[in-house]
Image 1 (cartoon, rainbow, N blue to C red):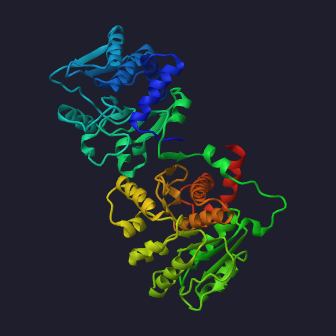
Image 2: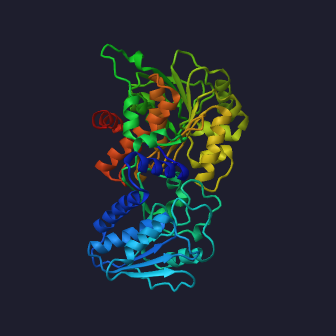
Image 3: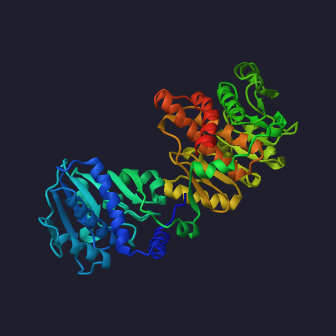
Length: 506
């Protein structure tokens, strides 16, 4: 699914009207109908609605929603149209005319002074002040209106976007001056700003409503941002050869684990084979041999000469992929071994966890990272490598820049994990749940991504498949165990069923 910017969405709206031979106000009516249906499904006819409409098409949507609610028997609908400049958009003006023709409408047009209505926690505010057409942060009286709404404790439903929030980048926006929605009803396609943690407080729950936009026009729009969904993922899977052997599905070498951290190596190795990999070898501290061989006998073990941590990352056999990091620690000898590996390895690689922490200690290691290597940092690891960031938006911007500069793939982990390719393309994952915020979940992801790499998937595809399958497995675990009872091992157990579910049901 594409993530389009506001200008592109406007172009799709225009193309939809042309292709379907409808007027722009017909499309507005279609959007308002979907919003009204959603409100009617959530609130009884006795509910009081206070609707704030701006002078543009977002205001037109809100006015149409007010009329449709009244036509469905909702009597307690109060409307405030802010027309402070005396200029309404054509469609907003047309919706105003239609609304004031409704018998018994409680309508106020604000042209100068605004006397705010009383709002309580029992009321529903419909925010239609400004949507994606907003060009600059809210100013003047509209800031006061936004703050009044936010302080009212009413349930707030925003149409398209919370007024004052931009669909893409919001670094110059003060959230104090943005309407804080409890529910955001947007149309057809998500906005990039929906996926940043710092915007969650103003978006509330967000839902996409299908208004029948022309999909040919959507396909023709260019964008670097996409949502990973099952329809995109399913075609990427390669069919299993009935005559294939284990070596046909790759051999992965894991540099993982150290004294007290062997669980990371075990979980990573398990995830490799559970995702379809053919062979997996764990190179770890000598002390880990009985642990790995007992906990996961399907894995081969290659002991380091050091008893407690890894000091040698020389590749002794033919492997399709190397993964480094889970539980290895940051000893000086381990950092030296990692540098030697990065300088001499030629096969695809995955770097995670302590491999990234080693890089943060010795930043020059980044210059040795082979092209198309996959890095899988969480927020803390990312900031240790690339500098402190104060929000997800700035972190994503840096990830795009670093992926291009070093020709690497960055899997920026979070509630919405972003796969950032060196081309500038960003793929955002929506599978997964808060129960996956548990020790070892990142090691499992490393194993899954490594597995797809070992099976011959191109690094960008391996990362995209990996994060989607990882999240889907977590969702299956949640369905069975709940968010509180889930562990990383439970996610591993659901990797196979997750892949099966994608292939059968998508």
